[in-house]
Structure formats: structure tokens, C-alpha cells
Length: 79
Image 1: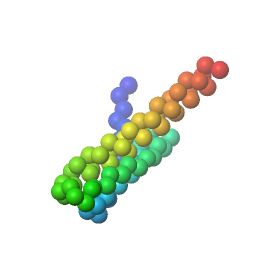
Image 2: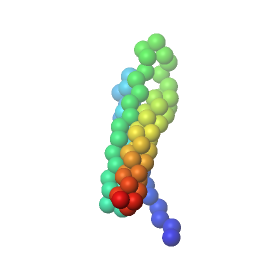
Image 3: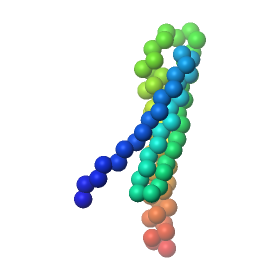
Image 4: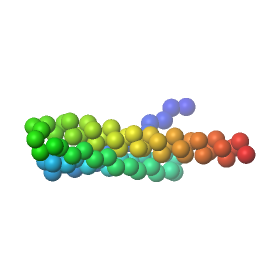
């Protein structure tokens, strides 16, 4: 069986801070997380760096949530 699962990322930037909202809908379960990156005022403005950091943080949190849900299901099935 093959299925496609999509993760949506909403990125907001204001020049100093980048915020990412990540969402994954998986067979009736919804996982959501946020990631932030803040630019040091002394650093040059390179928006892609803030996006990369904020995305990585949001996806890392999403990964932890999905892993925890899978572990909970395994525990329930083993009981």
C-alpha cells in the first residue's frame, strides 16, 4: 500500500524573527508544532537562515510528537 502524507508549513517573518507553524494530519490524528528563530541585530539579514532554523525546530518537535504517539499505540497494543 502506498500513501502520501503532507506536512504543511506556514512561515512568518518580520526581519528580526521567523516563526514556523507545522501541521501534519495522519489518519485522523493532527500534530502541530511551532519553531522560532531570532536574528542577532549584529548579524547580516539572510532570511533563509532564519527559515531553515525555524523549520528545523518545528519539524523536530513534530517528529517527537509523532514518535510519542507511535510509542503510545505500541504500549496500548502490548497491554
